[in-house]
Length: 252
Picture 1 (tube, rainbow, N blue to C red):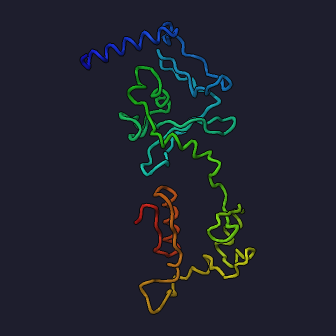
Picture 2: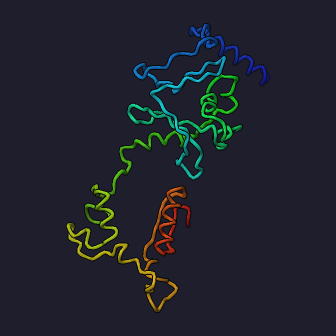
Picture 3: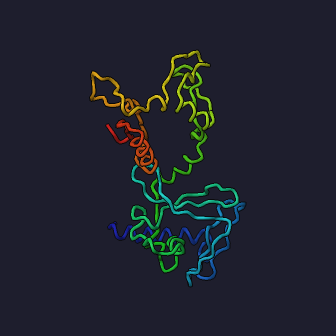
């Protein structure tokens, strides 16, 4: 069997299988379906679109936000579906305005209604500018609600390497980081630890015999993660503080 004949045969078999399941009368040529209730086993639709006129009727319970994905270094766009009643993220999509998600992509000047039409069948726009995310981008939803995700400062609660931590307040974290002292005295560790206040000395050399080490402010080492907006902020802090030891995950 030739390849072309094989695909033709497969299409016929598929059509017979679908109509055999009772879908032969399925048609959306008329009015589009109502919003799917959350209790019906699926998610509510974010909008209802008339496939003939392109009229967009927004679901008042859902808000869509165009953003960026931090699932990897590519920083592709994403589109987040949020339940306004609970504040919970329901799903993530690709961002139709972002060229890494869709091609051709929507122009930044296009109204938000176009982003809804980009996922519809109106004038086949769903085929032209439908945006997608990779598996890792879709998995950011699970990462966001991961039970092991760190949401508060954690302080070592036992000897180094034991892997035991206790949550502390942001106020305590800032206090101990800035002022130093003996924050692990309750664990029997009485060696003083310098805080940012003690390390901040842009005039005194770390070691006069080794001037290449620079001022004492270089004793602050900032080792961060990926390069994104948060890294820009921490880089500005490192520059203002006066340390040259600012590294991200991309450094070797």
